[in-house]
Image (cartoon, rainbow, N blue to C red; front, side, top):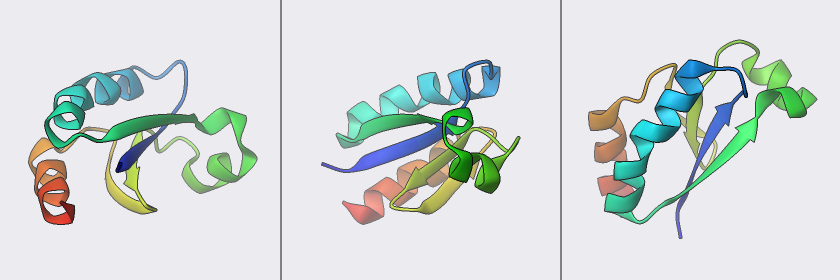
Length: 80
């Protein structure tokens, strides 16, 4: 199964919004969503700092700050 990853932090309303808005796409394309806390991992903190949320698939950044629905839908359609 394909997995999308959201780099997030607990007190981030943009992170909460992205996770909620991603639910319909995850259902539509049958993908799992993992949420990683940027503050719990020094490597993630070094990479992303305050630039969260970030949506990734296999290390590819799909979008950050806001879910770009059309872009993510197009990407998921292409990877099957």
